[in-house]
Amino acid sequence: MSYICGNCKKEITIESLKTVSGVKCPYCGYRVLYKVRPPIVKKIMCR
Image (cartoon, rainbow, N blue to C red; front, side, top):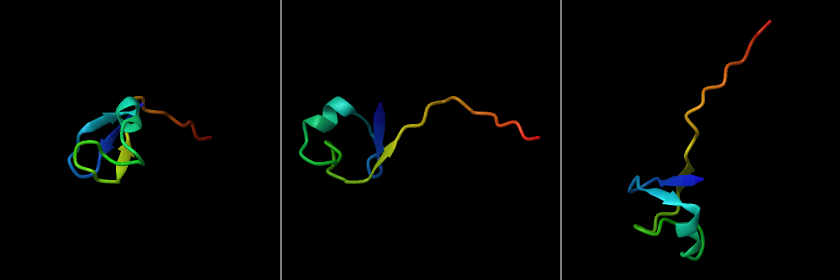
């Protein structure tokens, strides 16, 4: 699983998050991270 920083837009893995105390970007220190969604599109069938 990976995350993208809201400020510098770099992709961050869980392993690199463990090296920094708290939840923040190891590159710029920004505290807003977005989870990367999988490229699978779900179809919902309506009746």
